[in-house]
Length: 143
Image (cartoon, rainbow, N blue to C red; front, top):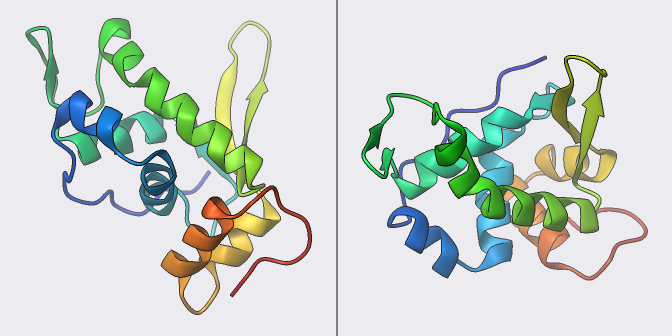
């Protein structure tokens, strides 16, 4: 498993900022901070970490955290945004969720061919934005 690119600086004002964000624009930002073209499987916790970094949300209900949120309550606060991004990525065939295992299930996001093509295009930001903002897809990735 490869490491994602470093997440961007906080641009949303906490959980309320994430809730007010345009869902597709948030999905574009999280996608670009989560995936890179040198890997295919990315730990799903990375998405929570990117959302946390984008929101600048370092505490919930008095729970202090230093890196990724460390409690279920804190992670659950980001789950709606996590799932929103996942559904948008899956709709555009950019990435998809994958779970493996039975007793110790591992969850991943898998970079799909269309998502990889967008990341290696001459302008990855524009290509990812076009891929995610477009209608349900078929055919090649727009450049």
